[in-house]
Image (cartoon, rainbow, N blue to C red; front, side, top):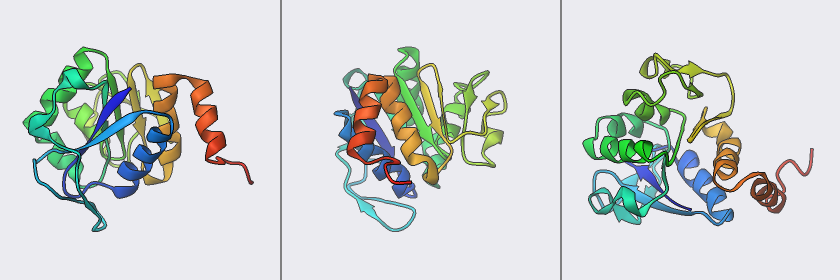
Length: 183
């Protein structure tokens, strides 16, 4: 399983880095992509990221899905023709679509959440007017995984792993991470 994580200035670091770190523990390959084709992308809290690839070099044929973190960058992603094109290509092929916090607004702007159960950061519902918002940390709806925000990264990542590899792989990764081992 090989996916891309789309980044633009203002991306939420925990949602990008935390999710990717957990997904990589499952054996998934995740490549960071600079949507605006710049060599350094700046996170919401000043973290500089050197992406693996530029958006101009990405083809949906080379990947099994997309991950969209939230933060102020979600607006840039929603308004980017290249992002919309690749997300629609993945959707048409029923590939993995994952977004967290304000990230689901990209799917909402494309109508991909119409009639679909999802979660997102409170206040972003106007971008998904025909979606079915669920008050949950993370929701799986077919090939779409959504997450509510930075505090739900673990549940979100585990749901992506569940969709990609099944419950045994989730349990394996959780055990190695000592997830809820000490309560």
